[in-house]
Length: 360
Ligand SMILES: *Cc1c(COP(=O)(O)O)cnc(C)c1O
Image (cartoon, rainbow, N blue to C red; front, side, top):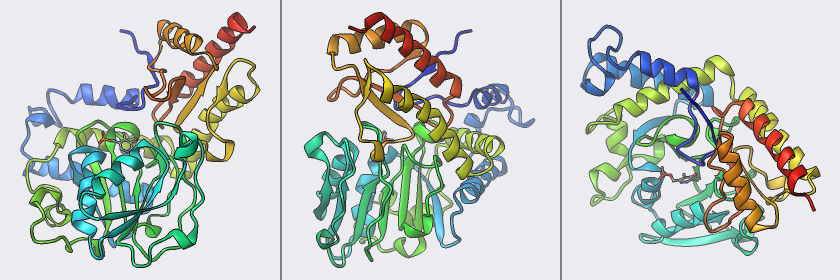
């Protein structure tokens, strides 16, 4: 059997222990004689998987009592559409634009309401985090939206605005990577396949007062109330995806205990790569220092052909999916929490050798 170090932006590496555990329980889950995939979501076993997963989210993220943890489908992308249906009041939303995902969220929201951009880093390919000017915020905005970690360009947002509007965060590539103050947010959502599981599950953490105000014509499955009132089981939920998330959350707890420890781990892992990039004669990091992500590291050599060669050669030694996003080029190493330290050490070792071979 061969396992590679997968630097894909998502779906991404899962902890090996999680995959092994899932394998061992594949045919017979806890003596039931069936796989979780074959089991009714109305039964006790599935219910306890949902409850434990929810409890672990609450514990790890220190989620206050007045927030619901909802297990949705449709990816983070469907959340873009759910926001206007559920949060519409006056018809304006503020947006901080830090990359393609914030652009996509804005595009969906703007089908249903006006959108006001409070800052954008588009002018320099999203290589920095724009300043939020207080005078740009809309009084009585229905919500303020930002993307906590820009997966494509590799930047992270560290500041929240002074606003009375509920703050909504797309945390798909950020959640569980460090402690976030949930109580400062009205709504946090994240697709599972980057930081805590597999595609098919999206978690939405929603403050109670933001549930139940959707307009009458809101489709049932786009209404957070449907999930809140039915323990995320109004229709057949993605049980296996929730089960895998439970295994990953248990792994977080056993391996790190707290998100402060996860943050140390992420900063250490990506720091090794950034330190190398900052002194390298051949490679350079794309992102301004103060804006750097601890999950997605973008870099290049200033020579497209050499970048391509790097990606190809790296793949040959088991460092795969290092190509940058198609509109950006260069390289991107996505290093989510489950990505082992050894993968990064091996990558930096390979970069050193490549640099010696190709320096002019
Ligand atoms: C990957 C990603 C998405 C899209 O997630 P889907 O689950 O594929 O819809 C949205 N936002 C961010 C920040 C992402 O990294």
